[in-house]
Length: 184
Image 1 (tube, rainbow, N blue to C red):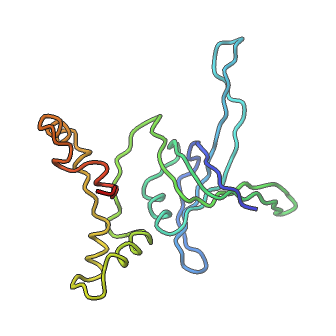
Image 2: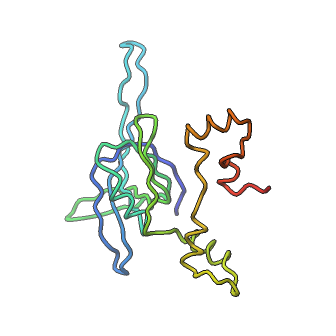
Image 3: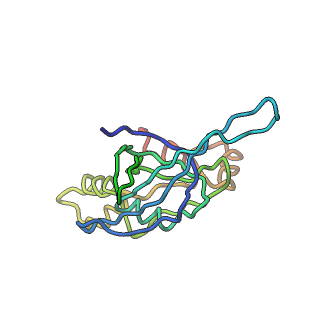
């Protein structure tokens, strides 16, 4: 049985990267999710317990996890949880594994600088690029894919935002609706 879960916690081990038997990139790390409560008697926060998870990320996510995460980072992980029993050299236990669908830094505790991976595009981008390219089009599929990934983010620049408000034209340099393809 697989359940989709979202876990907030700290990366406990630096991610390691390898490949599956089929050659698919995979990154693995341990995730610690410590629960806390406020103790009225001492007027302090106390740790109640820690849940431990083994997280696996595949394909492009694996490469980005390896490049972005370090032990101690606060993260949010969403994925499919599997609970399995194990036995090794007479010892038995239970492992809680998460096959990650998405991993990101928890911005409550710090900042991060997002950079799109230039050499990779998601399968959704590739599908969108293929759909946007008509058979009679003169553009190559790689050009169409690049065009499909281009998003106008000028609306996110504070200097441009103040220029927009001064001119009174919210569409002067793009808007959030434009960036996400809102219908005109």
